[in-house]
Image 1: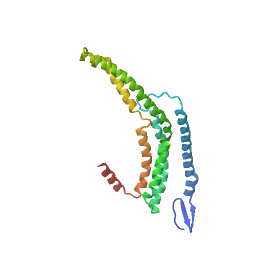
Image 2: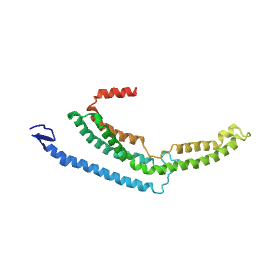
Image 3: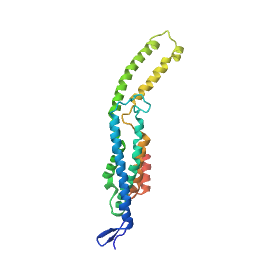
Image 4: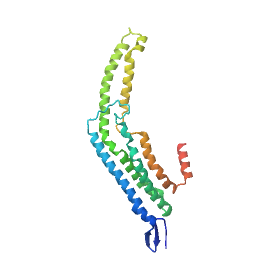
Length: 238
């Protein structure tokens, strides 16, 4: 008998599955593939849903506090795909780690596939949100034009009333409602300028990145010792 592992054993030039191997192939792999396929099916339904929603007459507001016209909640979408990203990276990373430890391959040889895996996961998490980008970009442009006209009217009236009229004093200016209105308008215009056409949430994006980085760490540590990795991170921060 030749090479023996938990999943298979070798007899001559032939490999045979052990009981654990048969369980992995018939049960574990089947369940994993089913869950991945189910998640991808949900992603397809979500993509179709977002596409149809983006074509509706949505009541988007350029001054909405979420700086996404009222669609800021869509930035939480990556959280739904974080479990898939974690599971896929964990399985693929385990295969790469085994090849590094037992077959002599190097970490850099997986640089291309690793980048491709990350791009695919980001596409799954953020891709459907692209349908809203044209709507929000147009909303920002239109909002800037509309509020610029309103700002011009308001600024001219304020200037004529309080700057060009020397009869009014500072006490009247402090009590004037026009001052508060002008400040509130400035904040509203600033929100429009900061409107992000792509609905994003920093916490959700961080969760998606961690869902890829954490299961990929054992693969990196298979070739790079943790002490070397920590020293490189500390030197980069310093």
